[in-house]
Image 1 (cartoon, rainbow, N blue to C red):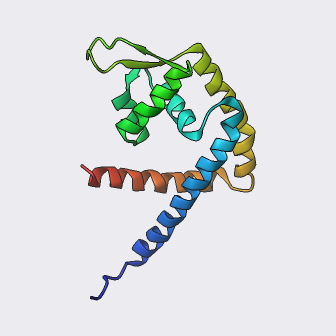
Image 2: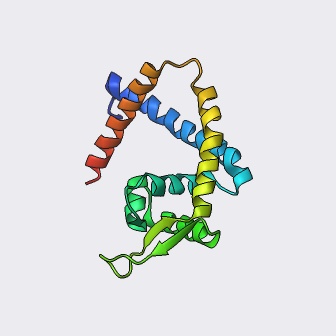
Length: 153
């Protein structure tokens, strides 16, 4: 059976997606190495970042949505963070069973320490790229994400 052919844009996007998969793996591995001395992983750091970025305490399901992740996976990470004293749970006045996740002081210190390590690391990686080019690629990735999110609805 003959395979449908890709448009030039489809071919270019297919190549980009394959490289994004590889970049994602490399970023997670590098992130794990960067924050390992803090007792974190890339996944834990990412969840802490979502909690920090939220304008108010949120339940796990909302954090998972913000991360574009699976609720069960985020719940497992939140449980690990709670076990290590990095997050706590608060009562949710809008939903009895969906507790709100909040950063503890220990969690704030861990996140801040991770960000102190991240700044020189990201600056080194960014060296040689123009901010304009980085913003252009970011815009393309955001557009791709938006289309994928819309297609999933």
